[in-house]
Amino acid sequence: MRTTMPTKSVYLETMGCQMNVLDSELVLGQLRRLGYESTRNIQAADVILFNTCSVRDHAEQKVLSKLGALRQLKSAHPDRVIGVIGCMAERDPNGLISKMPHVDLVCGPGELNKIPALIEDVRVNRTRAIALARSFSRKSTPLQRAVEFDSVEALDLSREPAPETRVLQSYIRVQRGCDKFCTFCVVPFTRGPERSRPPQHIVDEARMLADRGAKEVTLLGQTVNSYVHAENGRPVRFAELLARVADVDGIERVRFVTSYPGDFTDDIFEVMRELPKVCEYLHLPVQSGSNTMLKRMRRQYTVEQYVELIEKARARVPGLTIASDFIVGFCGETEADHEQTLQLIERCRFKNIFVFKYSPRPGTVAHKHDDDVPDEIKRRRNGELLSLQDRIATIHNERLIGSTVQVLVEGYSKAALKAQQAEQTRGEEVGWRRRDQLVGRTRTDRIVVFAGQPQHIGRFADVRVTGTTSLTLHGTLVNNESPLNPAEPSNRPLALPILASG
Ligand code: SF4
Image (cartoon, rainbow, N blue to C red; front, side, top):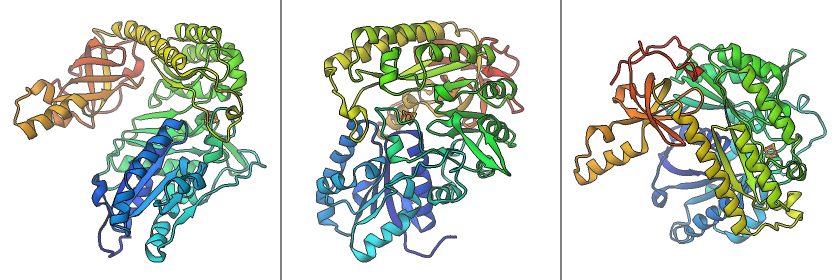
């Protein structure tokens, strides 16, 4: 229910993962119900919030630099509320406050439903407000500690997208926290133990989003495939959850990220194969191609088990694409370890990969080891992984030229938005092809750009692939009679209107 408070504005900047993107959406929803308007003008905002990431030092340094730049604004306008929320707040609140004493509000990711009260506290009592989960208990199993109601559940249940919020593709949290304790990672410390949300809450959320126009939902969890929740005395696991979400009318595509290789069960592949709404795409981070490194990272699988898993996945789910994450330059990584990672990439034929240079994080086990790979070597290894992947993806994408893929049209491409802006600001004619370039996504998570009309946005379209780069397909709209590409089973027909060519 909306209050009659005068309108105030909030600037919220989000760093990091999809979980943070969802958290920010939910925080903004809570503030909107209290009469706040979202603004992009940081200088004029009544409340300035940074939703932070602690996975790499670089991300934290960026936030500190942004906060430092706000010192003057705060001293000129002491009534402005400046807050740091998310993982960085939870990881090192004291360090943050000592470096940035003008920060008024510090709130960890497990306490985000308290933000309206914290802001009020700062305003009324002129004091710093802090909410952190700090000591997480891990005495029980994930099944025993599955959440029914807690503060983050309250935040998720409060979800009510603003009329202007884009819900076409939406995230739904299904699980929080992580119990894996990979030696390089801060997430188990900042987001706490693994807890799964009740399946009915998740299905209700999917239904609400479908009613608001969502066609695609992505189920989010740190190790999403290990989802488990006790319902009426029996465990509901991830495969069953996927099936229940896929059953929601109006939702046409279901994705999920991020999967943990050690926790995959065959029933998930069965659901991916049998249910047309579940997309043939996996994000399955391996981190290294060296068993020595995997052991040192405390990943609970070997290279051989990972390869066996993706071979099984591809055999069970036709047309599956797989993306992966890698860390280069982890403690003690030798040239031989790096070479094994290159061999793994060569062998696995990923759709795309994300590569990160190892960055030691305080509080983790790896932080106690030597960060002994010099930065220039990390940079070189990073580049080598990316150029190998680039070559593999280019070859694979070229095979798609001439085929037709089905995309969900997400909006204008970046180039089109730039062109439209140039037209508006400088009165330049950029030509309809650039101005009207749309971007869509296949079920297998390939990005496709093509010329179209605004009315195509938010709908499914068939696009004939005419050119490619390693990351993008280029194409032209075709009509419904086009043959679907058998190599891209993402084209399984859906019960949806297909667009005429543009
Ligand atoms: S599985 Fe490992 S890398 Fe992923 S969130 Fe958990 S601890 Fe971090």
